[in-house]
Length: 150
Image (cartoon, rainbow, N blue to C red):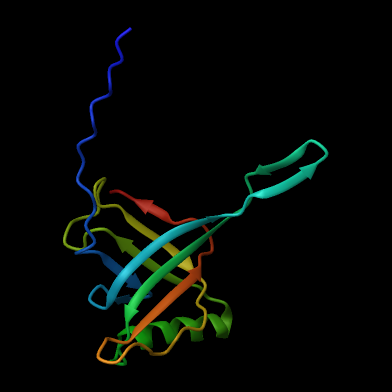
């Protein structure tokens, strides 16, 4: 019997050099250094006399972003603080949009991920001597992201 390997998939990897990052109404592309929309799987462990079994549990979604801190108008601090203030005032989550390529239209090879996140307190500034001040956020989303390809 002859084993035939499938043809390798030839695909272009996403290079994070032109990524679009919007939080609220602010385009923070030029201040963002990393971004991720991640599921956190929470399996349910059941122990019986026959052993331990994991079952699928709830999935919690995270909007994670590393931003260079800027106290300029409309930049990092104002955007994050406005989102936090709005949530503390009336429970309004902040919207976000992310796509691999800012310079390309939304499509099958450049999907736009949108969602809502619950703002949490963040580090106002910090870092090493001679380096840019960075702000990391890891905000829980209200549900899975919406993915648009058109």
